[in-house]
Figure 1 (cartoon, rainbow, N blue to C red):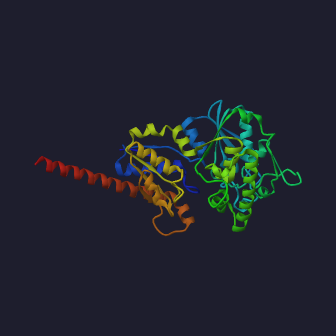
Figure 2 (tube, helix red, strand yellow):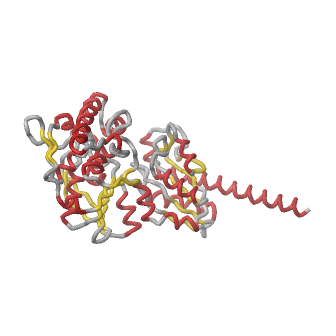
Length: 393
């Protein structure tokens, strides 16, 4: 048996590498020590993206101090693949995980640190820059990042704004003339795993604001500001952010990079899988196991499991899903090349308990899954032997 393990991280508990390690141990317990197992760390454009790409392409991390999402100094890294190519992970500088819970308020968070990483990459001479969106703590429309790159946003009396979520409603002038001129000379790729517009029920604020600390009152205020900001972008560029799939990614940073900076929008997980040479690896694979912390209706909207499942289906390789939990719409993933779906949680329990016992629960679930697979293989062999016996007569 040749297995390929390609799971996203289980946020707050297991890394992509952890799942591959546990799956390998379980597979060899069920199928024997000579079972061939290969694990590929992956990410869909959120946390862990630069680590997954470094695993595939090599390169070196560049670390620096930037403005964190809450405005405090943080240390963030980006990946220099070679002398020309660099990959910036928005979650490193402006991510939710790196923002203390008491400071998670999208009114006051900023994407400025991500812009500072881009500015540093420009300073060092990189001409092919990819920015992965996902895992953000921000809802500033990308203003913070643009300000770090030289833009100026002013209110009705001409005072420059700092670039936080609360500033959206106050923007009266967007002065883009000071943007770093090197931005016109590079290839900018925007990696993201969602197709949400900037505003509306499926927009940046209403879809992702709650997980960033937004109360209903805060979300209403931010959405009003984001709608106003959208009009400013249309006036300035002639392009409507709501017509660009993914403009709402990372609290609207997708709109800033995709429309104002004219970056090329591309699926984060597809970019990572291409760098991993995933399709070629499938030629020697009998079964792929993928998964994520929670599988729900968003899984089939450009996330790891969807991309892996569709590529497996294209190459005729079965793919099984093993996730932490299932939510509404989880079974939609079966329409995208995933053949079965199991969860690691095996009884009613609190989230804290599930996170604390994550390794134990995942390993036990992996054993159950592989035992089911072995049972199916044995039934197939018995069926083939019976058919041969009948044919022999």
